[in-house]
Amino acid sequence: MLGMFNGFNGRKLKAQLKMAVSRFQITSNKRTALIKQEMRNVARLLAENPPREENARIKAEALIREDNMIEAYDILSLECELLSERIKLLEFSKDCPLDLVACISTLIYASPRVDIA
Image 1 (cartoon, rainbow, N blue to C red):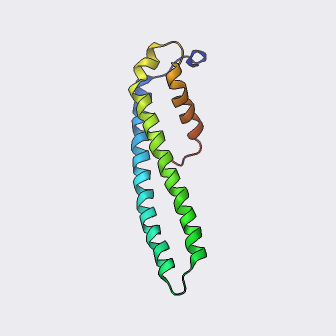
Image 2 (image 1 turned 90 degrees about the horizontal axis):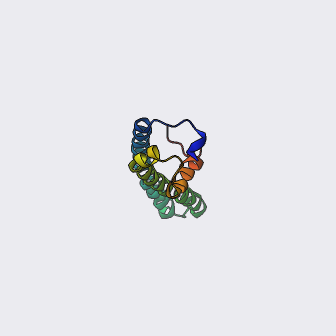
Image 3 (image 1 turned 120 degrees about the horizontal axis):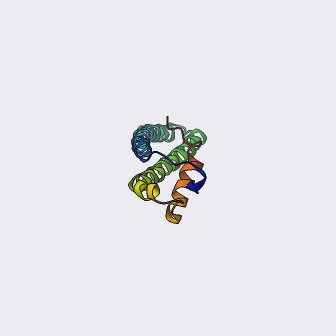
């Protein structure tokens, strides 16, 4: 798979992967804090008299989506760490090792879909 490219800079890739992992952690921590705050808002909506169940349901669905996104960040972070640990294997092999194809494919697929700056 890497045979069609001239190569890559392993040190630069490792640094970028480490930065991506830290960005995933920062974003995950921010979103976790926001989720906790929104959960309190949902509880407040349900505690009102009369309860505003429809608004609470909409907010709860948004919280579930955010929680799923945090899980995706964790998976992508693990994929980045795996690739970072196996850069030497990539540097010395002519083609991409079969066990890393799924990891690299996942990162390529997810990169435009996550909002990590």
